[in-house]
Amino acid sequence: AKIVQSSQQRYDDLKQKWEDKKSEFMEQFQSRKDAMEKRKLRANDLLAEIKNMRKEMRECANEIREKETSITKMVNKLNKLPKTIDRQVYVDRILGVVSNLENQNKQIKQILDDVASLQRDTNQVVDKSKRVFGIVDNMVFTSASTSKDINSKRQLNSIYRQVVTMREYFDNLVDTART
Image (cartoon, rainbow, N blue to C red):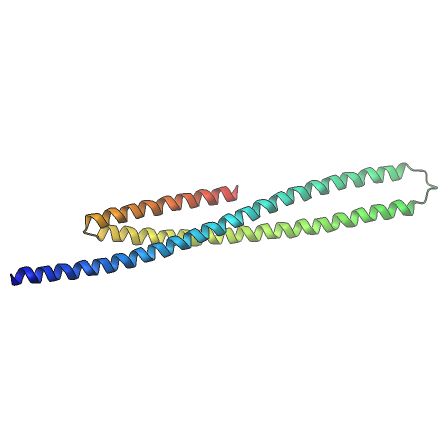
């Protein structure tokens, strides 16, 4: 009876230790999963911002092309006009258009700088997430491989599959953002 009692006590102690470790791992997993979700949301926001900036860049580039065409037409009209007409009025108009084009070129340059900055930020988020995925993969895999309880192994295997799936979804999201 004493042996059974000491075995039961040892079993209860080990069971309690396992439950403590299990809850600690689950808390870590949940906090990392939450952090990953936050990063995903941030990446989505950055992706939307990049797409908007690209759209603005295309619109600005088209506008510049149209204005450059307009300038060429105006210069051609100016050259065809009789020389006695006050050319200063036309020259002032052309200089105004040129000034507007220069301002738009500055704006486009700023947009390109912003896009480059967002791409750097996206790359940093991707690098960080890869490191976190590697750590989580390793932790869950190690826990699953060292666990002796079948139920906990099943749970850890399920968690591992979910982490792998999450990583694949995130990689797809990043690929979408870069296209």
